[in-house]
Amino acid sequence: MAEKRRRLRFTRTERALHWVHASAFLVLLATGLALYLPSLSELVGRRPVLKNVHVYTAVAWAAAIVVVVLLGDRRSLRRTLHDIDVFDRDDRDWLRRRKAPQGRFNAGQKLNAAITAAFALLFAVSGTLLWLGERDTRFRFAQTILIHDWLTQISLVLFVGHLYLAVIHPSTRHALNGMTRGWVDADWAERHHEKWSRDVSR
Image (cartoon, rainbow, N blue to C red; front, side):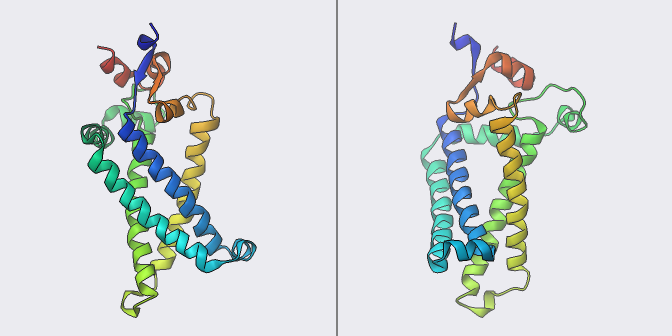
């Protein structure tokens, strides 16, 4: 009976990928803000150490993602990519605040995933250029640090919103269970992700 009241939402591979990205993001955000804000930089001190932690965390993040993708359940990752990529009329209605049944990801989650992936790529490119620019002037571009800083500020706003919905907001915080244990309550799934719940219950 307990199994019938649950819906498996994320595999171990999907959860591992999420937590690798989340943990690296938090370290990169903390060290990045400490490097960016003079008051924090003075408070923490040891700027070269902070910079090294920032750079090596970025490298470890990229390597860990590759490892998870290579060794994990790639079929589930392809399914997730497909679920996020498909954007139908129900998703557009949801964004217009009209009542519309949603799949495993609602329209907002799809947009958040797409923005997160795009930002990760832009962070990697701009961060690499900044690192190379310190060693070779050919890689120094006037807008690189500005892009990196703007990405940080926008990401901070998105992160706060994501954290609020995942941990605090009463109607959505149950979703965190899917990312920690893998499953969500069937009744909750039916209310928030009707199309997906209906498909997996067949």
